[in-house]
Amino acid sequence: MNECICLSCLVPPAIDSSLVSQSNLSVIIDRSIAIDCPVTGVPLPHTSWFKDGQQLSANQNDDILVVSRGQRLEVNNADLSDAGEYKCVAQNAAGFVERDFQLYVWGKSCHVT
Image: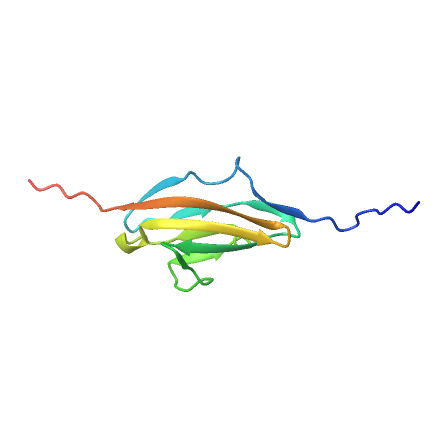
């Protein structure tokens, strides 16, 4: 009787719930914020980011950066146009997982005397 030993088992992607950012995030205009989506799996999953359904290409502009092997999205100098729904999608040969984030950008308040 032959017995097989798995030398390279596949593990589906999972998001580390103890380190992932909250689902609803807020930032004040001109400030910066990071959205963390730490994933595990074998092989290490490829992570993609989407904003309002459109895939973000890696570092497509200077103010939105994908860092930490795709597991963190940084929004620098936030603008009102950065508000919206962001999605982290991690995928490998064993499957995929996704997480949604809602980002709110608040304007600075003005006080008139």
